[in-house]
Image 1 (cartoon, helix red, strand yellow):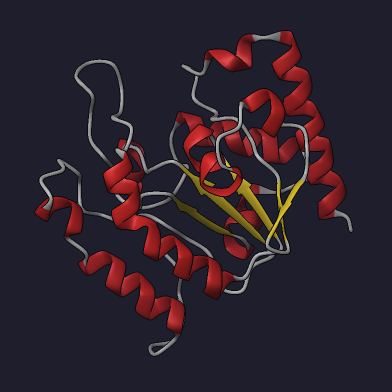
Image 2 (image 1 turned 30 degrees about the vertical axis):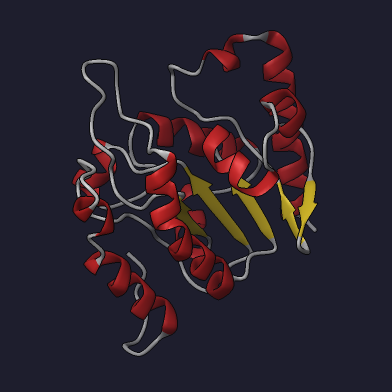
Amino acid sequence: MTRTNRGDPLTELHAEIRRCRRCLEAGFPIVPRPIFSGPAPARIMVVGQAPGKNEVRTGRPFDGPAGRRLFSWLGWAGFDEGEFRATEYITAITKCYPGKKGSRGDRVPTAAERKLCAPFLARELELVDPEIIVPVGRIAISRFLGKIGLDDAVGEVHERDGRLILPLPHPSGANLWLNRPESKELLKAALELLSELQNQ
């Protein structure tokens, strides 16, 4: 979790998010332990879909198998995981683990859950004030770019409201999009762009 002085706006926001029970009160079977990390301001803000069960256990975003894959991508682009976690901000569209979907993996947060959590993300964006946003996966990408396919989103730098948006696919092993040769080329192009931005 972010370590900042009491009275700091980001610390206060994090405390408010931890107290939130909106999804539970609405009947959603979440695990109420919000996960996020990093300082404010930060140049890069990574936005995932939602924490997973590993993240609930460790308290760190992207700390399971998908996270290892994501940080291997970021490593290819020239980022050290430890330094990245210390200097950049990592959060998600919804802050709490949504729970399992039967035996088929984690449940995708509903549109209603995403709406309940949206004000928190808006305030994170305001406080962190990132130059570059890296939305990871379809749900996060749609938050910043609207309805757009991965083939059109990944491998390009998009600009919205004065910020650069560099989408990445979800790094889950279940993401079949990543199996296509053309998808691998788009991912490579995205990481090359991220590497160029890092060095600017």
